[in-house]
Image (cartoon, rainbow, N blue to C red; front, side):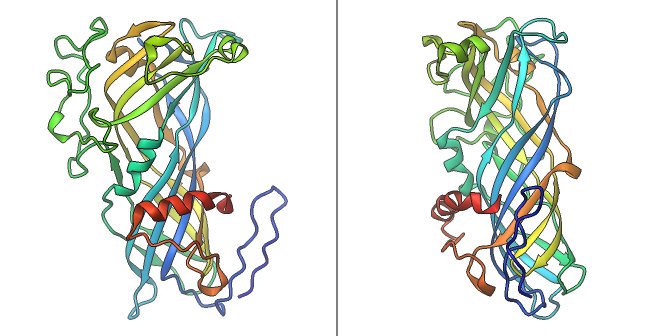
Length: 340
């Protein structure tokens, strides 16, 4: 099979050239880029609230996978090793006060993954997966098991540690709880399960929260999440979180070099501590939890593109070895635009 590389009319990439003779051979190293379509579950009672409530935004995830196709039954791919390399979380607009049509005092808010958090991703232990092929010809359906990535907490725990809003001293009025490098034992459901995955001395992993208004942008004010009381944008600070995403691919194999399709997933995060300021005033961890939305992935509108990156069948060779996950991910991140 010698596919052309012409792009589609909508700007999407064309089929990756592949010299595989028309019989699917998928063993090797692959890179997958996912664009999650994310809606938001609005919460009430926080310092800010999602506005308007029906926003749809995009979140991205870059993975490397090593696939091993069975010699006895080539429709079985087992095992599949997966490594998470890079991610971007969605932006949402919110408001301090009442959300109304045409509201002008919106705060464009993002939970940012800082470099230390991104660097922690390749070290996440992911149980090996497997997949089935419907046929051995191009156009086959590729149906893998779900991959689960847990960051900031023990992956063996069914439930991630979370802040208990109803525990004494852990509610909206207590602005001091959860602001230190020690897990707040009386407020977090399972401090023992938290892991300082980004090695910064804070429980869980540290995400940056930045919320800007039109005035912030006009004034060219920069977000200052690591010293949120020192001045900066309207909403800023650090959120200590645990995080889990479990992509389930549904793909069509275009050739031995390319798979495309959609991905369903749950994206779950819990704030287990925070140091966040709104308009230069501290807000409690409870208020931060109520202010930041939960995510809802629309699997039917969340595409992925996956390409072979080991040079076989004329595919690109990124010279990556996922056994050396950190180095492999650093190289893959440099190439990710080739997946767009």
